[in-house]
Image: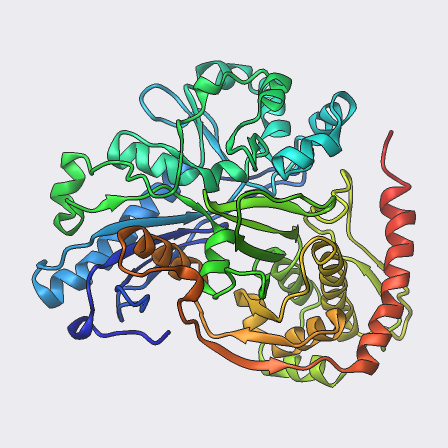
Length: 505
C-alpha cells in the first residue's frame, strides 16, 4: 500500500513497534493500513554472539533503543500537528521463541536469549531421551530443539541456577516492554504459540512440557487472546508521550505471523516465502483445529488463526557471510553475475548451516559444509551454490507443508534479502517449480501488526480480505528446475552422511 501524508491520514491510527533480531522499527499507520510518511524510524540492535553458540541481546539496551525511536516517531507528529494527533492503539511485533527472565521489580535476571542461541544442545538431547517427541510435536507444534524455551530453560537451571531462582516471570521482549511501560503484561496466544509450551489446538499451557522442565505455570504471564488490551501507560510515560496517553496497548504478536498478514498471506491460497536473517515458508489461515505434519512447525496468529510452515536458521545471514568472507563486490555487479550463471553449473554442494539447522531436520549438531571445491572454483560460484542451497531447503519445506495443506495458488516472496536480490528470487522459483510473486510491502511485519490492531479496533472488517501490493512474478524455468532437483539428490546424500550419520548418540 502507498504511504500517506500527515495531512491526509484517516484515523484511527496505530503505532507499530517491530523488534527484530538485528533492528527495531517504529512507524504509524492509518485506518487503511498506509504508513504515515516520515514516521518510520529504525535502529540496529547489536547481537552478542560467541563461538560456543551464544546469541543474546541486552534487553535494557533494546528497550532504550525502542523508547528513543518512539520519541522520534511521535516528534514528527508533534512538529507537524502540534501534538494534537491521538494514537488509538500500539501494536508490537517481535521475534518468536526468544525470552528473558525478570524479577519482582521487572528487572532482567538473564540476557535476552534469542532463537539462534544454541547452547542448550545437551538439554535438548535430554528432553528427546525422556519424552515422545512426535507426541509433543503433535500437541505443541514445536520439536524438542534448542531454539525453543524448554531446552533453554533446562540449560538455565543447570548453568545459571541463581538467575533461575530469582526470576519471577519468563517473558518475551514484547511482554518485557509492557512490564516496563505499563507495569503489567499478559502473554498473547501468538507469542505463547512459539515457546514450545503451548498446546496449539487447546490453546492452553501444555502440562507435560511444564512438568518435564519443572516450570510452575505461575512463573508465566496470564495467557490471553490477542484482542485484550494490556493496560495504560504509567504516568511518567503518559507525560512523555501525550499522544499515547489513552492508547490501547495490545499483546505482542510473533514476527512470522505479522509478516504473513502484512504481505497478504492470510489464507491457504497464498504461501509466504521469507528470507531475512533466516529463511521460512509459512501458510496462515482461519481454523478451529489442525493436524500438524511432522517436520513442520505450527504456531498461531491469534486465537482464531493458525500459521504453519518450516524455517531454517540460514538465509540472509548466509548471503552476507559468504559475500564478506569471499570479498565479493556488493550490489549490481554480483547480482548480474549471479543471474547469468546456469543452475548447478558449479558442481558444488553446500550444506548452509552456519547458524545450525532448524527445519525440516532439526539436527542437533548441524554445521555448514562446502563440497566439490577445485582449483578452478571461483568465489561467485561458491556464493551461487550457497544461495541455491537455501532454495533447495525451500523445496524440501514446500513438500512437507503441502503434504498437509493444499498447494497454494500463489507463493509470495517476502523479506529484505529476497527483495534485494532478484537473482536469488529466481533461483527459489526454479527450485520450488512454481511462480514466485514479489511482495510490494517493504515493511510487512510492522504493517501486519498494524492491520491486526485495526481489525481489533473494528476499523477494518477482516485482514484476510485487505488489499496488498504485489510486484513482478518470477516464472520457474523447467530446465533449471530439473538441474536443481538433481542437485537436491546430492544435497540429501551429503546431509545424511555429514549431518544425520554424524550426530552423537
